[in-house]
Image (cartoon, rainbow, N blue to C red):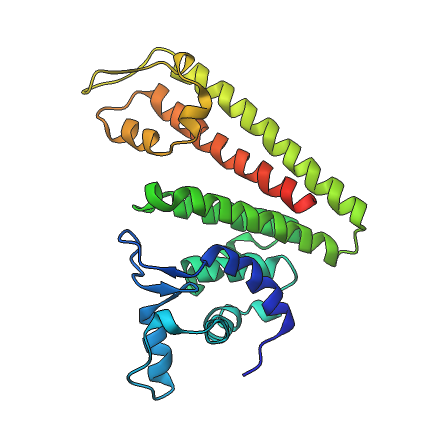
Length: 260
């Protein structure tokens, strides 16, 4: 079966994040090769009348691409979407399911394609941050979503006929804005955390004595604060800005990379 050239270009971005063989104990998908879980592989073969397929670890890239094309790209209707929006929808479908990705798409349309891309990625991050295994996979998910947002933004601009210089300057402006937002969030982390306590555990949090990067680079500390007992308003506010800083720093790096 042949797959479209547009799909292959978009899939190359997604495939870079899916990787090769994986069997992480915290991943509910279990055994996975090129992002294809054993469950999906078995179901795919069963539909073709193959009841005893080879182990999922032995699948080829071509076999994986065929599954991605049918089960995610076409199933999510990405072949009918405009450049950039198709990438956001496709990568979301692979990472979080076709139904959820389509729901995010429907909730995000109504403005420009750039706005649709931005809104979809924001909704996706909100969903991922609420998952129980975010502490394990959160950093990778965050970098993946911001990478997709930046590259989808580039695709939208290309489709609208923008020149290379305009595209580069627009992406660099996005990177600068994100970096400035991260710096503002870091400042609020320090201000919000000064003399903040978490009742019950008697923990004293004084970010003025701890480098901001040491806080924002470790999402676990936020979970510890939020689960440590009765939470003060200061800790909640601090946790919000810690998360905002992490997101904006990742966006800055992704948009800068896409502008090159």
